[in-house]
Length: 114
Length: 115
Image 1 (tube, each protein chain N blue to C red):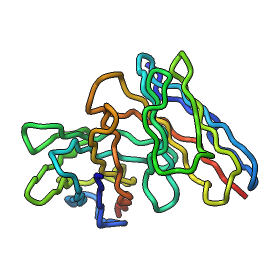
Image 2 (image 1 turned 180 degrees about the vertical axis):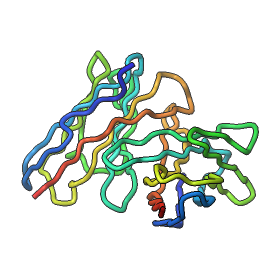
Image 3 (image 1 turned 90 degrees about the horizontal axis):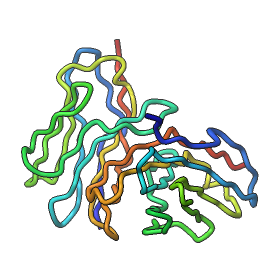
């Protein structure tokens, strides 16, 4: 069974640019979560999508956005990049309706903003 | 809102020694608790979880954790550490939010294993 896959694995952008990160969940999982892992800050919750709808978002500005497609894959978009956006962006998926959801993580997309 | 504290940023142990990583949480009710491990360049892998029942939880790779309600703690233990256990360890607490339990993570503890 394929795990959670993310692309690209690494990318470098400059301030002010925009970036799109992609995530494919485990087959059968309908929920996708996005986390930002900046150096020394642990994982910060960004967004949760389930069945195509945004269900919850963390304390991030509106320039962080995303969507979930009918096949449950997801994109994370970050506009007007700032230096502090440099981080590892982790996607995770879980089955629908499992309540206490156990998240399965991808390997992440490492974004460097210069 | 829930929160998680991992008081140790780094822990250094010798191979074969025992290990305990500390985790304290803040939440008004009984939370769902998790420990994840992240090897360099990898995503997070679930080691174990506590939802209810027996407060001593067994996980993969020989790890266990004990939920102590009175201390709001969920410490991770291993009796004998292997060099391959060197990694970043994250404790997480899940509390209900919008119909799901979105985990809140601690800042992590980096485990260094000396030969």
